[in-house]
Amino acid sequence: MRTAFQPALPLVILILCMYITPICSFNITKILAQHPEFSTFNHYLSATHLAGEINRRKTITVLAISNSGMGSILSKHLSLYTLRNLLSLHVLVDYFGAKQLHQLTRGTTLSSTLFQATGTAPGTTGFVNITLHRAGRVFFSATDSGGNPPVSFVKSLKEIPYVISVIQISSPLSSPEAEAPTPAPTDVNITALMAKKGCKTFADLLDSTADAAASFASNAGSGLSAFCPVDQAINPFLPSFKNLTAGEKLSVLLYHAIPVYYSIQMLKSNNGLMNTLATEGTKKNYNLAVQNDGEVVTLKTKVDTAKITGTLIDEDPLAVYTIDVVLKPRELFKPVKAPAPAPAPTTDVAADSPKGAKKKHKHALPPPTAEEPADSPDEEPADEKVDDDENGAVGGMVVVIAGKWIAAAAAAAALLLA
View 1 (cartoon, rainbow, N blue to C red):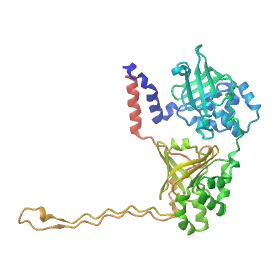
View 2: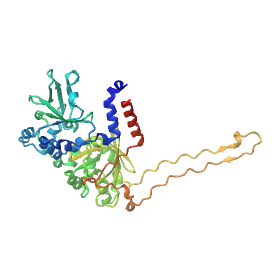
View 3: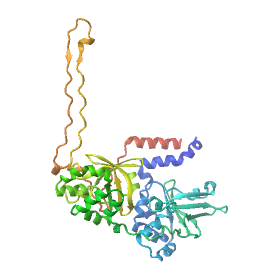
View 4: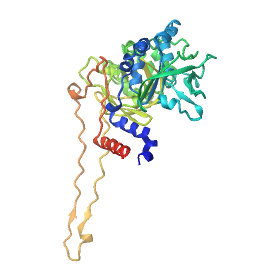
């Protein structure tokens, strides 16, 4: 019986990890801290914010580089953002423990990396070839290695089956594309980027509204996720926008940005309330909810719902996404009332009554009308404003695990142990 379920072991473990997160949680910084010979690699995973991205993944393989290997990288004097690209090439978005590496099907495979996942790697330059030689040695090489020899597997440092594998490789991977100079995201002109990518109207509103563009730019260095409505979505909204006061216009624009960096993968794997730039300095909530359904991410206010349709830039600490609907805060706009149900038709009881029965008419009562939320912007519910997170960044995710998922995970575990 156990043998019959053995091929499904990775799937069962992933199900358990999906719904009982503490069982499979890990911290790459703490794992590497147990190995002083990788302290430099560990330091730069944190400095480039890759450590947080690794910890948020459910399945990952880290190709660790020793201090001597990192010395050869640092001698190239790469910028921090270029170094991030190169190190992200050493993080495979799949699980490869020592056993899996020595049992490769057909002796070779191609794995995507975090460098590929950022969208900054052109073509297949963000992939790594893994090859098992007849002598039992395993080699790794970037698809654009530039003729440099592959590097070899040395040893396993830490493995949580099908969740995270940290292995040492003999020397750093070489990739001309990953090592190409990368400008800092803070040097990006956000409104110019929006204007070139289908959000010119929104970019023009930012530039013409006092303090709006400056607020976006000043937050970009510390962490910012912005959502720009495409021109087709915002043009019909312009008459309503023009009728707002100067302060209200600023709040609407600031409502389209979160003062925390969220990659598209982070948005796809989390749900919950977030504060926006409009929340800062006011007693009002000005928050929105992120919800996802597979690959589709939606942003919900109490007035409307927008869908993320594209990515303009996704490079920590800055992410800019296009959306198909203007985000309207409940503090300034009233929710659209649901249409009232049609009145029930008047029925004639006598039509179906035995002969001689008195005629009685039942008149349908008027349907109850939905009560419109009160407009009291100065008295917003206190429990809807999201507290600062442990890193001091405003915003956060609220994740709720229903009891039925825990029961499903327990059932899966019971099958595994049968």
